[in-house]
Image: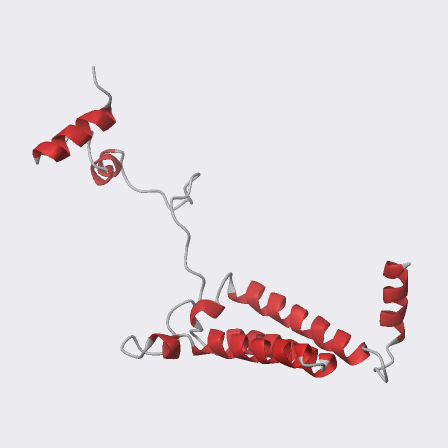
Length: 159
């Protein structure tokens, strides 16, 4: 007896439908009312809150993703500034870009692809990374900001 996959291929090749069991909707209706509990096995990933377009659908693609593009452009400018020999300014720009991403994630109802996880998780992640990079940029030698606990932490981790 041929396998189900082979039967389906033959039926498609002949232009007919393969014999299959009942459709999933039919099975759910026959089992009774649907449960409000989460399924034990998920079949898809939920979109993050605020993950819709940041501009109307008839706008060009870059305009719909302006929050993400602005953070990426500022980060690219910071990397370019760092590569050109200004590491403090470049790192400050990168940190400020991440902090701005955190603020946008909090204030704007829809941020496009800047929304990766839940709103809270995105805000905390972008904010903490931005603050850490900004602080490290400010502590950079020479003539860096003197923050005693950061100096101790760096010495502890390096030695």
